[in-house]
Length: 139
Ligand code: 5GP
Figure 1: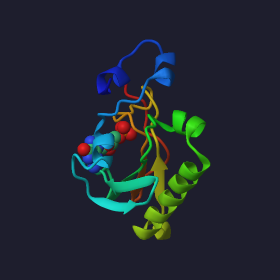
Figure 2: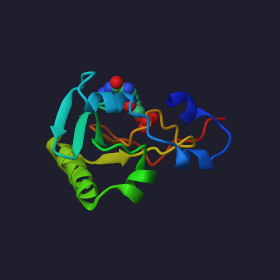
Figure 3: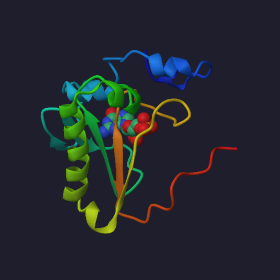
C-alpha cells in the first residue's frame, strides 16, 4: 500500500481506514535504511530537511510511531507522543531561526491535500515571504 493508493480517487472514506505502510519512505528513514539530513531527534520524534525544499528553510517533523497522517495521530497517539511532536515543531523552528521572522507549518492529509508520503509529517517553511495562506486549486 503506497503512494498510488493514496492518490487514487474514489471512496474518500477509504483514506480514513487506510492501514499504515511500514515501507513508506519516512518509515525507512526512521529505521536508518535511507539517509536524511537530521536536525532533531528525541524518543518520539525526528526532524530532517526536505529533499526538495520549497523555501530556504523547509524541514519535516515526523513522529516515530506508525501514523499515516494527522487524522489517525490525533485520534490514536499517546499524550507523550503528541506533546513531544508539538514541542519538537516549536523547538526545530526556533533553532532554525524561523521564530524571529516567521514560519508556516503545514500537514497534508489525504487526496484533496495531495499528501504524497503516507506517514504523518509537518512541514516547516521559513526564510522568505511565504505569501498568504493556501494556493488556488488547479484548473
Ligand atoms: P506531502 O506532499 O506528503 O505533504 O510531502 C512529502 C514531502 O516529502 C515532500 O515535500 C517531499 O519533497 C518530501 N520527501 C519525499 N521523499 C523524501 C526523502 O526521501 N527524503 C526527504 N528528506 N524528503 C522526502
